[in-house]
Amino acid sequence: MGSHINFSGSQDGQPVLLEDFSTLLFNSECFRALCCKGPPPARPEYDLVCIGLTGSGKTSLLSKLCSESAENVVSTTGADNIRKYWSRYYQGSQGVIFVLDSASSEDDLETARNELHSALQHPQLCTLPFLILANHQDKPAARSVQEVKKYFELEPLARGKRWILQPCSLDDMEALKDSFSQLINLLEEKDHEAVRM
Image 1 (tube, rainbow, N blue to C red):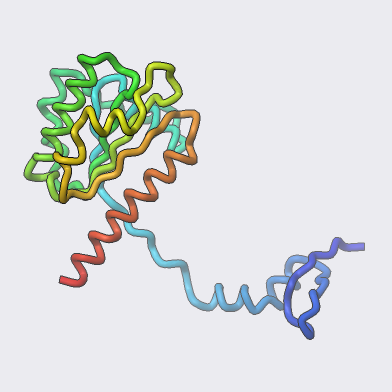
Image 2 (spheres, one colour; image 1 turned 180 degrees about the horizontal axis):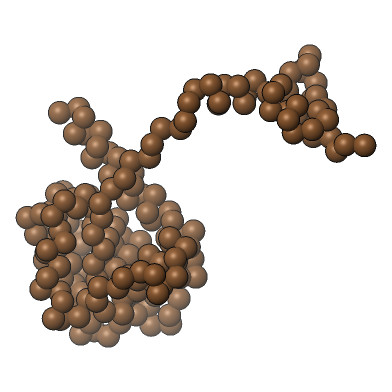
């Protein structure tokens, strides 16, 4: 005896029991509607630049988000000798991800603040949406989003710009995915603005 699938299909508003999956596919109005419209539309792709100091967690966050092994992600460090070359990666970017270690030392936090200020004012980035990730929220010394916002002076500095400040850690991938969804929304808004012009 075959297993039955309860399909809330059409016979006088009553559920129809179907013998097998192939019957479900051929009798389903939903399937016909989906299959006859062609392939789903392509999702837009965006070129993003991800910057932050060494140890902020850029490689770890992105590799976990993409389900990649950290060994498969080419890490470009945020060390002093490399930061001066960041601007070489800015051209063509449509958005910026800035990762900061919210549990870092005062000195490192000050350096991160200066780098974020420079990025927000850089001619190639100043009109782009920013996703600022306050990483390592799972550490005891982590500063809250409100503390980061105040310390980084984001309200006055980023006035008129499109930016999102979100807490994150490797332990909370749902929050990280939500942060990227918010960034995509900002990018899509920019796409719609360009179409309207």
